[in-house]
Image (cartoon, rainbow, N blue to C red; front, side, top):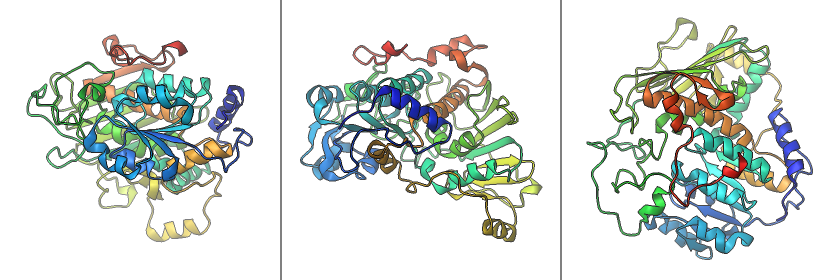
Amino acid sequence: MKNFSRRSFMKSASAAAAGIVFIPSMISCSPSDRLNFAVIGVGGRGAASWTQVPAESIVAMCDVDDRMSAKGFEARPNAKKYKDFRVMFDEMANDIDAVIIATPDHTHFPAAMAAIELGKHVFVEKPLAHNIWQLRTLQKAAKHYGVVSQMGNQGHTTNGIRLTKEWYEAGVLGEVKEVIAWQGKINFEKDSYFGKPTTFPPQEQKVPEGLDWNLWQGPVPERPFNNLYAPRTWRGFYDYGNGKLGDWCCHTLDAPFWALDLGLPHTVEAIVTDPVPDHSFVAEESLVTWQFAARGNKAPVTMKWYEGFEKPVVRPEWGVDELPGSGMIMIGDKKTLITGGRPNDARLLVPEEEMKEFLKNPPAQTIPRVGEEKPVQEWVDAIKNGTLPGSNFDYSASLMEMAQVGVLAQRFGGRLDYDAQNMKITNRPELNDYIKEPVREGWSYGENLW
């Protein structure tokens, strides 16, 4: 598979940022050319992604945990099997065109950078990276090495998120100054992705057979194993995940971020009622508020994220008795729009008959449609056909940086004044250590881009 030039990629990325999705002649290959894929992170979310590409096209699979990879390894017997992606790339770099990465959050960045530095196209499961410096570095790397990138947030491929942007740009909502989003409390007893220990740090337990605990930890400081870390319930631990906000923001906040062109906040503030004393684990209740400056003729925006609290109070003008369990509302001075926790089902908060009349003659569709909840297919098509996928790193890294500043506020509480240009928290400089976290020896990537 031939790569396209860095110059042509830079032009393409600029066009995509301006809203032009289809870019002709970006890649010098035929649509019929076969891509060879490697997979890093075979079980869980990884399986949801790699099963969308032809079986014969997967040439390598890598996973540190035999418990999670067994079914995937069995399903793709012809693919070479690895535990360490660094060894995989050493042995098979010339046989791989594109890489699907679906490891825990803290190892997204080194796996993606190892692939990008070899010129491999990358699909990375949300939330893309674990800190702000990593996000900025992935943005730089995708351009510098000329690869097609995609973050795996399914909602960005939906019709609903496109309707949200089109309706706003057509003036249906009017001026939007306020966004409200909410997620329910995490049920740590039943949630399959969040587990809470009884003591901090959790007690040491025996490493299960088949798990390479050293490789699972990757770049982060070494600590004793506990079964709440692996294989599934690591998301609440800030060493490995980004809590529910980091996990769900790319679904729930994607539509307002894209439609309103929010960019990065100048201030984020969090009310946290029950913080863990050492700030190592997500709190059960928090309210995060971002403040965004005016953008051209767009008004400043206040955006709130309720997590674990009671749902926002229903306002009389919304015309509903109760809000769903999770969702997002964009409040305009003409109309108000609501979605669920994902942007798929966008609608106006108006009586049903009024909504039916609106849909008889809606604003024109100005954004090309792609397969509903098919980010892998959109990425593959982009590699082959000279297009950029919607959640390429130019877009998705900025979306996640907005969220990451919120995660820091949620973790430590209080107000953060954010200097986005310099990636600095100006009023609490001690928190800047979390903008770029230290890494263990052997796991450093991307330093050459700064």
